[in-house]
Each structure stands twice: as structure tokens, then as C-alpha cells.
Length: 432
Image 1 (spheres, rainbow, N blue to C red):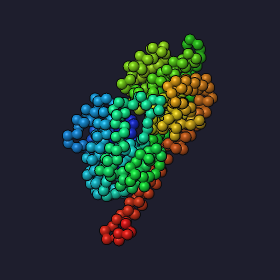
Image 2: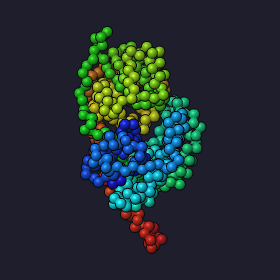
Image 3: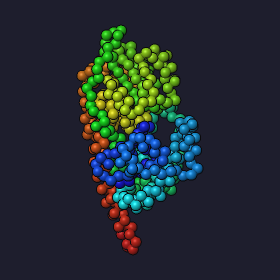
């Protein structure tokens, strides 16, 4: 097995953790697996991986002259930053193609898997590698709820109509998705965004999962009593980037209503451009004393915060997946989430509460009511937490995902062999 990923990072989270989780679980199964990634990950992976696994990582440089694009992208506004990083993704993948071809020959690779980028519209140049190719799981096509479209960046709004045309043209030039033996998608929404030529060999599989051994189910955390009222304090938690699309400003408005009725604390783990304005909002609404802005934490520290909370809240307006939600469910914590995007797949009435996003007012009221309901009902919290744990065990456990992935590899090998026979030199044209 060769995993090819332009980006691999557990520290930064997001899709960069997917190739590392896949690499680790395959190695744990005894599958001879190598990881090809960008050289910028070397320092982190040297510290993160055991020596025996680090020896299986091959690092590739980028295309000469493109380094400043990534560096500049960090300083740009959100819309332009996304564009710059998309260019960087493609550039790194292009640089990895000859390295991947060489490794397929030298290591007798039987399957190549490119798990990221998860975007179905960003093209892949990985073609003619000499081995079956699996891509994904892809997950994208997320739009904001209609009432919140004003939160899109101006650049996104201006370029929205042109994006499908550009994506189609780029996927026509770089035919990795079209020529892959199997393309994995997380849902039908993503399937419809694929280039039509890539929809013939599509299989559905979750793009996110949890290593259950790292997330033991915990009983409800020790009670904390409010000094003023003597009531039990309910601890709510959010983990993520502090950007407009995460809806944290709406959560703060809801929490202000909650604090008027029940003893509660809200912990916000993460950072981003909206942190200062969110802190100001907390003071203006009079609930600052009950809110803690923690900033970024290491994954292991985030885990401790999740296991110490009573309820996890995800007010995100554009969440294709949501790993933190799954981690809370794996820890047997109930979840409150927006009834939109990836939440509709992972959260249901047996694991948490989904909140209406038809308007800001409806969302504020929905969040507040759900938070107060769970704050006043420990039995319901326990019931929903147990349901979340069961759902992760059956659908989002990395071991379950790897079982299905191994079957996909067999499917890819069969597809690749059949295609080679059909295109063999000298074969009659009518049978091609």
C-alpha cells in the first residue's frame, strides 16, 4: 500500500489527520504500508510516529518557485487564502506524481490511495502510476443555510458561478479522478459534484472516524455546584476555529438566555480572527463570567476537555463532517448541533438534539432550549451519550472503516485488472 497525501498533520487536525489515521490503522493490521507526503511534515512526524513507522514515510518537495504562494496565502483574506491553498495542493500533488511512480516500481506497490484533498472539485494529477488507484473519501458541496448566505466571503459570492466551470476544465486537464479505479464519497451530495467521468466507479464510505481506544466512554463527569444558587453547573463545550461559518456568535446569544435560567458554563476551545469580537460580545450580553476562551490546545488536551464536559455543542453553519462531534459521541457525551450538512448524518434523536437553522432567531432559541433541556435532565444526557457511543462504534469506528477500505482495495485491484485487459494492445476494437 502507498498512501499519497500532499499534507499530513495530527497537530493541525482537519483533513491532514486522515492520511495519518489510515496509515496507522493499516500498519496495525499488518498491511505493508508506506506514506508519501510533503517535506514540510517531516519535523512533526519525526516526533509523532514511532521509529518503525517513520521509516515508512517518504517525503517529497514541492515544485520550485511555488513556496511563496503558500506563505503568502496565510496572510490573505479567507476567500483568497482558500484559493492560494488550492493552488498549493495541486502543485504539491504534481510534484509527487514522479515520486509515486518510482515507489510503485521499487516497492512493488499493489494499491495507491489518495485520501485527500476531500474536495470533489479540486483535481488530482495522480494518473498512470502503474498500480490501482483509490481516491477519497471525498466530502464537499456544502453551502450555508439560505438565511445565512450573507456570511459567505465577497470573493466566494463573486466567483460562485464560475467555480463549476473552472473545476470542470481543471478536472479535464488533470484526470486523476476520472481515471481512478475507485472513488470514495461520503454522501450523495458529494457524488453529484464529481466530474461526470468519475461517477462510474463510486463507493460510499465515511471520510471521518474515531480510534475508539483513544476515546474510552466515560460516565458523567463529577458534579460542580454553583456557589450562588447551590444548583449543579452544566458544562457546555465547543471546539473549533473561531470564524463566522462556525456560528459561535449565535451560540453566545443562546448561552446568554441559558445563564438566565440555569447554572451553566461554556468553554470555547480554539482560536481565529473572530476571537476578539466574540469576547466583546460575551461582555455585552452579560454572560462573560460564564464563558472561558481557552485558545488552541494540543489534541490530547482537547480530549480531556471533551471528556470533562456535560454537553458538546456544534453551532456550525457549514460542517461537511465534524470530527469533534464524533469524539464527543465516542466519549458518551450528548451533542447539540445544527440541523444542516454533515450533522444530519452523524447526529439524530438517539444521540443528541438537532437545531433549526431557518433563521438566526430560530437558531438562538433552538440552541437555548436544547441546552436548558439537557441541563435539567441528567438521565437524558446519559441516554443520549450512550446512544452516541453506540453510533460511533457501529459507523465511525476507524477499525470498521478500515475493514471496508480493505474491501475497496480488493475492488480496485479487480477493476484495474479488468481495465488493463480491455485496453491491452492488439485487442479487437469492438471489445474495448
